[in-house]
Amino acid sequence: MLVFIGGITFFLAVALFIFTQAQNYSSPAKSPETCNDVLIQGPPEKQTNILFVGTADEAEVYRDYLLAYEPFSSNREMFNFYRIDKKSDCARYKKIALYCYSQELQSQAAVCPHDFIVALEDAPVSLRASAYMEVASINTNLPKTVLLHELGHLFGLDEEYEAGYNPGINSPNCKTRCGQFTGTGCFQECSDGTHLRSVDEGVMRTLSPADDANPYGSYNTERILDRMTIPRSKIAGFASQEETSCLDASYLLIEVDPRQSEWQARAIAKERGCTAQTQGSASYALKDDEMNTVFSDTFTAPRLFTDGNEDADNTLEGQTFESKNLFYLTVPSDTGAASVVITDSAGNERAQADLNINNRACEMLS
Image (tube, rainbow, N blue to C red):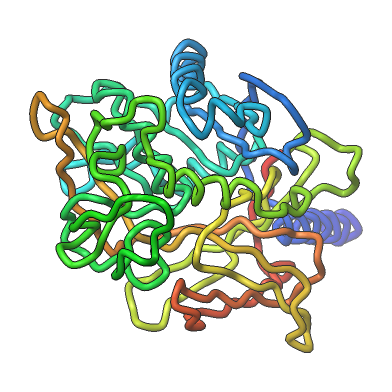
């Protein structure tokens, strides 16, 4: 009888231990990627941080290419570059474009500070590159100017060729009146046939820009610099300013489903790593129990750009999609917030999610 009771006691103790652990961790834990420095020139919270997903040689080639052109060449000290070894498993969006954005990539990238992720893949030249949220999916068999083009999207610029969509009133580079540009030209066609652009043959229109020294044109260059100089908060998730490794930080991963008019959002995991320092026209706010904002940030609206070269003269062709794919936000885990409110680029509240994940199993990378 004593042996029987002792066996039950041991079983209950083990079960309680397992249940308690499941409140905070899932098993098996994933092994984190290694964050490799490519070029570090300042504290990440004060820099624009670009993370390459690819080989060391690829990262160096594309870094050097980027820093040879304006506005990056004159502001090279404002950039940090990182790399992770693991090759991304890129999907083929509608069989026409590379699409490397995924929850898995978000988790892999979190070991490095990053504003933007540049995923590099050797793919058939018929496949377009793409830009979605903070991820540029680059087909390395396309002209390298496609990197400038897709980064333009990540900095907020719209297409300057006929792409069949309305860029909206908040577009930084597509306007409805020539007077909205200062000291530049004014040319018909910017995303659609009715909007105007400031440069005739810039890199947001063609992969062979007319002004090789300033491929975006002066007006668009200023818009990129505006984004680069927005005051930055420290990388959220660090317990103290002295910590510099993203493995010492943590964040909450929010999954957003935009397929309905009312987006659905939920906190799905607490993971180790840095939050993405993204910028854009959409936003989120972390709220306490009394719905006071304790932290807020912006992010790129879920619009998918796909771009490729149509012929030998590097004329761009592509399509832009109002994406209905799931997207993910990485938000600080140390604010004490109870919920998150997500707002679209037009200022409309689209979703709200409870952040109390302590009462259910969540994943924490070790």
